[in-house]
Length: 405
Ligand SMILES: [Zn+2]
Image (cartoon, rainbow, N blue to C red; front, top):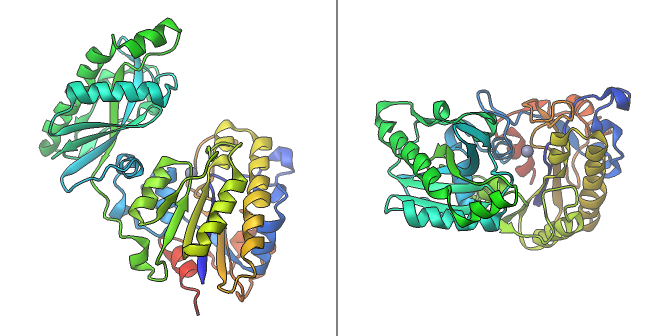
């Protein structure tokens, strides 16, 4: 049997008074997800382990069955994998934002949403001026870049820059959590201040200022970690001889690399509502012809949830159903080698809350021959009555993968 997980990022939600107190999954027209739920089995999955923030990287690693306390090393290392930077033992990687400071104030975490092209020039400039045998800067996407310190100590207290807009930056600089990390903290804080000196008069920034845009005039490293001890999925699930991941999001791509999955790029896959659903569905069907496992990640619902736009989020859910789940099910339902399908979100992004929450998410599992439970629709309420109950850690993945009986 082959396996595909179709993940609608942030798709779960709360009940909405304007929808007659229904959740968005209850209200949206999702004939395919409902059909698969009715023909298959359902349950709830706790994707955010106690003590972890409900980030997409955390939740997606959980969905794949990884034990967060063992493998979680922050975002920097996942983004490193995403851009092909191979970390060696002893390397510490950090997410390195380029941000806008005004005097003593951290104005914003994105340098006014700088473009990748502009950022690439600045990061290359920093690598030239501040890079050493120990210190390396790598370009990522837009304001999100990578800093690697050989021999760095990860026991640091770092503040994510998006948590402190319009606050003084100095009191929020990096602090050592133990004496052994003091040297690393001092080094990083010196790099932040040197970057401010160097970037102030860089032509890219002078041009941005002239155009009335925010300059990218400081680095802000955070989320330190070492190479994660993630075993490839094929090791735990030998039936996965070849697997692939389809996503527009760099963190998910990074998780896929460590999980030993091939990353398939789809043209027009934007991570937004206008993402190329048909292209992603076609790529998933194509991948299933050669691979045993496909992880299809679609970001659109999460973006709509962050915007608090109920109608837009309903549309992203209906799009996922009609333009991804439906075509994939129709394409594979009669294959000689049966295909198991799971559908779930990583975490809720309730429109009312406009950010992620850590509540368990509904999931469905269907494959030819599965004995259905009594649940007839796919949503946050009905799946609570599913036969799987509430699962956690690797229970969902074990159940999904070990159905070759
Ligand atoms: Zn997410």
